[in-house]
Image 1 (cartoon, rainbow, N blue to C red):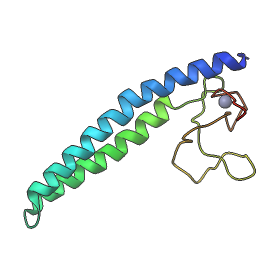
Image 2: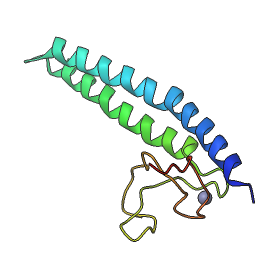
Image 3: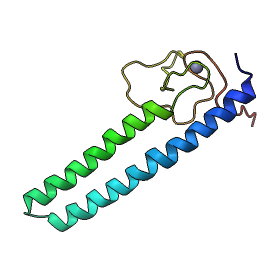
Image 4: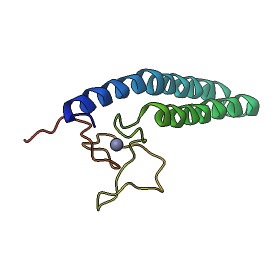
Length: 115
Ligand SMILES: [Zn+2]
């Protein structure tokens, strides 16, 4: 088992990779989709359809990249949001925005600060 600081540093690296390969292309795709949408509205249906496809693909890309990179360095499970009692939520397809610990193995994922 890795020490807390190691898992924090590794998760930080993974998060940065996810930002670069996941969030950045998604922003470009959505922006592109919106631009095409504005161009095609109000009645150029094939163009609006293509724009919707762009935005849909951005969503699919986001989910694929999140599942690939947004993982706990210790147990390799996708870091998902937790329910109120601290157990992983199975129904959510989202990812935890700022996880402090892994919902599965409890490894530290970000620096614990006392404010
Ligand atoms: Zn874990």
